[in-house]
Image (tube, rainbow over all chains, first blue to last red; front, side, top):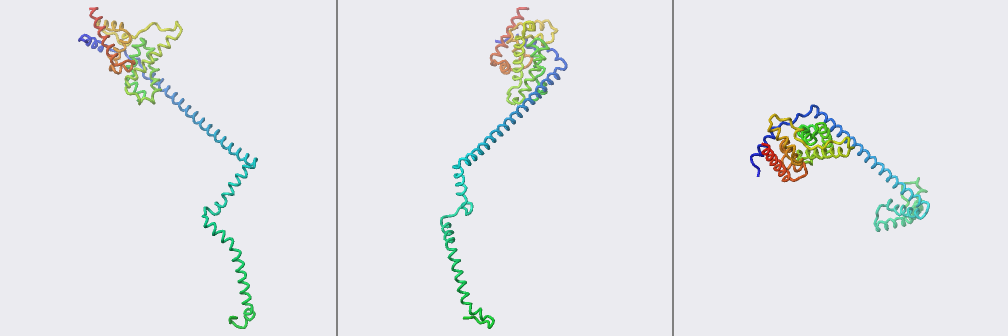
Length: 151
Length: 160
């Protein structure tokens, strides 16, 4: 549809020169834009600081609430008694494990047998000592007479 | 892209476009400052911009519309006279009578056609970029351009 005439119009329009840009426009525009950017950066920094403060306060409040709840539980347990026995049971139940570690039934039986036979062994060894003293009695009386054994 | 680089590439073209749209160098200067302040705000997202030329003209165009809305909302005494975009405000007065006549006739075109002609001829935007800047399709931009040139041709022939 377009003919040569519009192209001539385009050429004429292209030949027109624009008005000059006023001096100092660049400096003015860039100065105001850079000020704006600095303001924005400060605003962003303040927002970040505010968010950090809120996070710290939230952690402090939640942590304090958790500690208080734990302390209240302990106090309630002490005052009620039932909780105390439960707590004591837990403590005493863990004592053998703390002392002996995790031991098998067989090892436990062996330990118990040793504990039971220890007095008997001690009694027998005393009897042996007395018998020996009886046997050595005559030999000890004549110890100065020679190095012979009484037997 | 930093602001200095942006100004180096598009600053003067934007200024001329703003003078064309607003008809006043003072208002154009104010709006150009606002436009660059907006670029400063968009600095972080600048990488997302696919076509910087179309983008800067779109931002400038939006600033013009904001500026005109602000002016319109002021009391009647402070209101602007009814202004339309004008080639004569942004172009130096030509020496040839035929060129003077052409500028006069071009100023009588509808605003949307004048805008497309200005962007195409004086800022070198493609129809796709004009479409992107003005929020219209590239085909619409091309038809507006063609209609405007046809009207100018007809008006010139009528005057001769």
